[in-house]
Length: 227
Image (cartoon, rainbow, N blue to C red):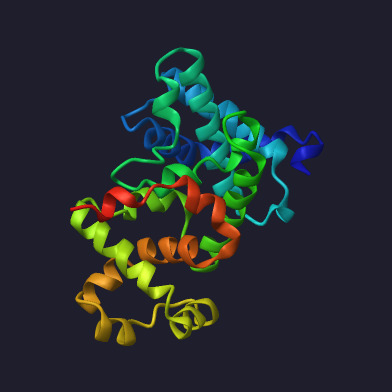
């Protein structure tokens, strides 16, 4: 109904989502943003665009879709204004922090020439898979371990996990990690595994699912396992 010119419904939706829009803009800009700032206005316009473009059959929640549109429009503006260089917007593919969230955050990248359609389609599928495990796309950056040694350990555990077919079956069917079995074979406590559950699953999906081969080739994991 909102798509068909119901301005009152659109206004009500925008009003209810204003806190969400501002939180998204703050998160993307990584600094406090108020409604007097240009970035907030861009976020509001992008949210309005998301209302027009969203369809339930996309396979993702409206919140996730709106977040992606806001993020894409802000980065477009940053590039246009010369506030960031091209190299700084490559989603940190080779970054030591292994920012999968930054890569996955380019779901709407099919509108940008820098990202191929194949990768964009894989990222959309990746987003849908994450949601099956109760993981929100915008959470990934937050749940990424801050310490390099922890990230390296989780990458190694995820790689090993993918060699255990029975573990993969449990994860994919029951949507949970086989923690008891894992503790027996990895030098990490159950508490640590539980704390890093979302990060581990996000890695396992990339390593263990053939449909994400382009993402595996794009994200650099090598530096995490150096030293």
